[in-house]
Image (cartoon, rainbow, N blue to C red):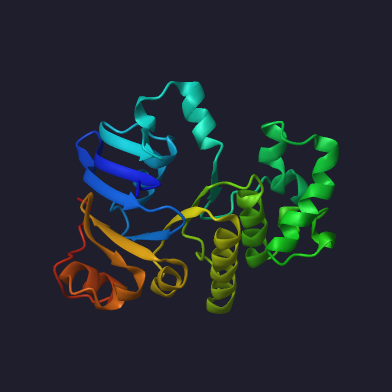
Length: 255
């Protein structure tokens, strides 16, 4: 079976700093992959390279067998339109009401008219457990958990076949985090999508992931079932997942 996403030899540097140093990663169709790693390990840069937001220095990123790093801009944009994204802090537009946030991509891609957006938003809001009374509120009137739900509704609105989640439970209490994770699992299954999430939250990683991988010093050092994260047998992974101060991973100090 061809991986939905196949990354090989991905490299990215910023000045003298090597962020990605030959990343290899396979994400199979209709599975959820979680990527863990410390701050500055390259998780977000990897995600942005797959999305096409950042141009890698070397390597390939294949979606459905096509290397998108070598595609002309229009074809790359077409592939990107099949991807939904839940940003770490929601990234809602403060000046727009909830319904317009949810349907922003659909209107921008001319899949629906703006006059239809308010009614369409109700369907997506209901999928993430929000009542239709929320659609006319502004993001500032919502709690953190509700903002995450609205951002998730926006991510699934175009029925993407790939979904990316950047720290989906950041800033949420444990109960709300579990609720958001449950909604993510339900939405991914209902859409039949392939999902990639980056997270520091080990409980979240095990809830939403079928597979998992750890990135350290710009490389994938371990991959396997998400259920094995806490007993991987890899010293770096075990130190990270159990939050141990002592171990092979040493905090780098800036000078």
